[in-house]
Each structure stands twice: as structure tokens, then as C-alpha cells.
Image 1 (cartoon, rainbow, N blue to C red):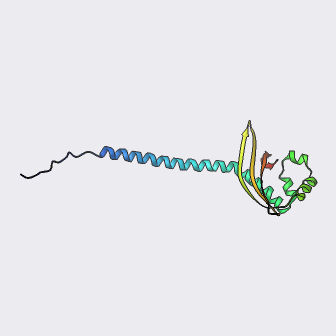
Image 2 (spheres, rainbow, N blue to C red):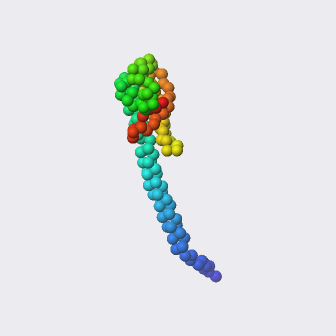
Length: 148
């Protein structure tokens, strides 16, 4: 007697193949959608916090250069109303000179229509000491100003 293998019925894998293709397309669309959404969110955040970072940088560049008049011009009206240019200059010259800085976290908040910003900065002085300072900013006449 000879042995003859029994042929198993052939399964139709067409349905499984279609399901896998559909799942692959859905996953690809989700990845593309996430990337596009992330790009637009990143752009919106950069557009919001970028000007706060730039205003902080402009102020600190003037402080580092010893250009007290330009730094004073970056202050908000309220702060300039409390401190004259002469007093501001005296205060700046009484402190160790800033020789470097690094702007870290930048934040913008909108509370009841009042927009405020803050920037956390690591300052390095001519003595080699470092400190972290948080600058408060307000938007006046379309420009961000240091206000605290």
C-alpha cells in the first residue's frame, strides 16, 4: 500500500490581505496627519513665544554691551515710570556686568484678555557667577517689553 497525502483545502487569504492593506493605509494616514499637525502646532507655538524670546534677547544684548539707554528703552511704561534712565544706569553699573546668558523656558499666557510673557534666563557675570532669573514681559503697542 502506498501512502498518498491528503490535500488540505486551500484557504482564501484574500480577505486577510485586504484587511492588512486597509490597516496599513490607516496607520500611514495617522502618521502623516500627526506629522502635519505637529508642524502646525510647532509653528503656532514658535510664532507665539518667539517674539518674547527676541525681546528678552534684545534687552540682554543691550545690558551685556553696557548700552543702558537701549536696555532702558526695552522696559515697559510702568517700569520706566518708576525708574529714570539715570537710576536704571546706576543700578546696572552697581551690579557685576553680564557677560553671557542663555534664554531657557519662554511662556505666554492670556488671562481674561491680558497677555503676559515670561522668560527664564541663566545669566553669567564677569565674576564667573551664574544665576537664573525670570523676566516678566507685557505687550505694549504691539511690542513685548521687559516689565519685571
